[in-house]
Image (cartoon, rainbow over all chains, first blue to last red; front, side):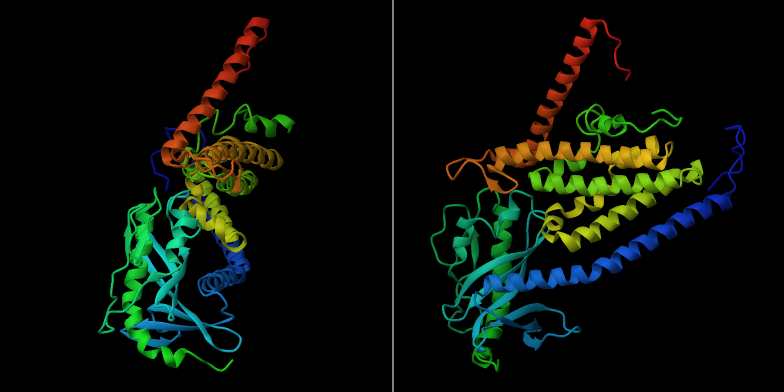
Length: 229
Length: 216
């Protein structure tokens, strides 16, 4: 605030401190009010947009899913979704007759700028990844942000092999991202040229998440296969 | 800027768009200019968001200009600008989540855009409410135009698209460097070159005709 010895600086009388505080306080209060109003006004839309985005992402990776059931993987067990369980979210997609169409799960991997959060679809019939969608990323616009739009990259996820090994405790083959144009195995992901780091993030996200989820999920699949519509 | 009240003319708006364009002439706000212009859509969205903040902050600063003591003016301007930025942040999240995701942290960073603080200090704090709003809108339009020109050039050359619409067909090999950071500098350099050439040409013509030069 104002120093006591500023009288030599200018001929104009010094503004008293309380006035400075009053003005700043008033402006801050006005700002707070405006922000709260806008926050209250936009909150329902933002929540709805987030829910829609999740639903769209789940439907994109599980084609034919009309209703979704959420589970949470925590401490090596699947729990029903509730506010006090934190862990990996798993979505079971059912069609209208109540038959399991596929499973979607969250995954995240370190990208170029920040964590790349994805949602991938798992098809129990072929024991493979059937698609993925980026949920959140801060990757370079024009490069790493085209992960789920680049047709050549998406071709990797038509049937990406994630079979479990003989003991059913781990993936038979680790999902790895290889340099553009060097994919030779069904569990490899061919990186986008110019966005290798972001492509690797997707591979790591799927590998980390699937290697935790699938050994827990596979024995219980018959339990989830059908539900009353 | 004049400290006395000047009448609002077309020039209050247009000077900011062309003669005093914040990016191409004054070279302000380079951080968002280079960072978000990898596509025309991103540039346009950033421009519109900044315009909203400019108009809002100019309006409020001008309304409160006689109340704000000069010792705390900068702090007050920053609080006002941050308020409008936060509002834009929420509104974009609600109305255009895809654009919000694409622009990332650069929406929040509008707070430190020197164009906006510059307008508050150099214009809104000395002029009437309406003139300040018009001036803010003009600056916003100029900034949006600059972002759009840069983003357009970079997207066309770097991705072969404009506003996401494919321009050249499948056989076009995009000039990838243009949407990388260096491309921002190349495109900005080219535009600055064009603008200073236009300015020089104008000055030379004025000299030839023996007309008085424009002040500034």
